[in-house]
Image (cartoon, rainbow, N blue to C red; front, side, top):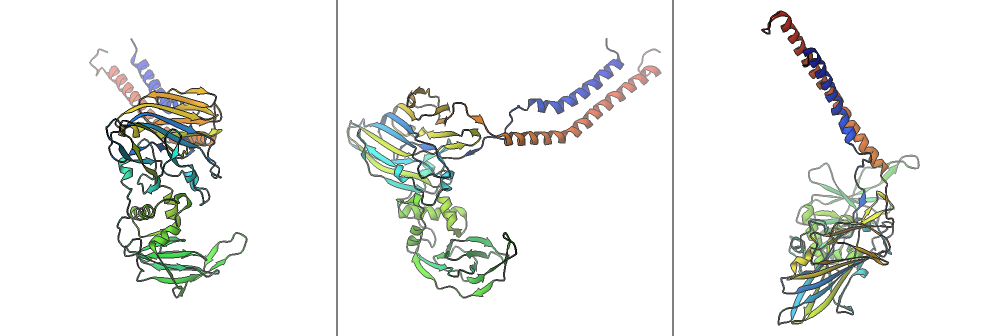
Length: 483
């Protein structure tokens, strides 16, 4: 039987051991290769074709082909040409010809395409064909403002996304095709032109420059430099004022600019245009071919979503990169007959920059198949000379000289995801991230060391006090035992 004295010593040791374990265990549990998380440059997912309305057509088979001719270079996208082609064999089981409107959403341009020259366009990679020989079929290139920023991912919802499509210009306050636009341009190469006004929804303001809010209640200031312009659509602010601003520079090659006092000036001689002409002039190259109605609706929805009546043209251009992009066309399948229909669009992977060499993640949304009356087989072909590192679709890919192929009877339970790399075993390349993760753990744990020591002290004190009381009770007989 353990004596009280020995029991007290054991309790003290246990308390101290528990304290040490509380401090040490988190370090032991921390993996040796701790990392702050994967670093990547986001691309964009892809999806298949949807019927615009419910229809009786069945998909006998789908061949999904990824032609990976190369990987994106964020510094130069001009030669990029990797695509995905969805080739469908449609069957019409009815006794009448069926004409179906088709919608093929394929998402935003990726972030790394935004870093390239404004003249970047990938529309030459679009195609829609009909028949075994691939006869070109007419289509419309469309965009819609997407509140999910144009991403196609596991949470993509076709019905919500298509709600932004409208064949006609939507009505919105003073904005219309024909509403007047007054243009003020800075023609002074020696000074900037500053405009101050109170924004309201009685007019909309756009500028080559950038906006800031002054110290006065609700007043906005916009600065435009030589050659830049300021645009008022639908009317002019009643309190519009102009100033000339020059800058004096401090000494040294990198001296800071010191603002001089703004000098009031008369309004420059304006020019006039219409809103439709104005927005045609600011459409980026990547949106060439998009209708006036879609571009107008996109800008109106952008302004509504921003909740303000003024925007820089840079803001509109950058947000246009977040548009949901669509190919729209019609297909007629004869009664009791079959037809082959193929759609090709560019494919943009996520770039994993934490591996050496980089690896590339591709996502393709397979759920459109559920919109058809029936779906047969799915074949996925990846044409690449590189390595397939992983996939999460449940498909079993077989490698051959030209790439990888998987066949599935029906649809996998999920979306198609796979990762490619020029190396079969890319190395992790994020030592900085690992070091930061360790530093964060150490800081957090060190913050708890004093708490653990105090807890250990309290436990030890309690054990010692109880032991002394027990000893005292034993010697004076107060515990009821004989002396």
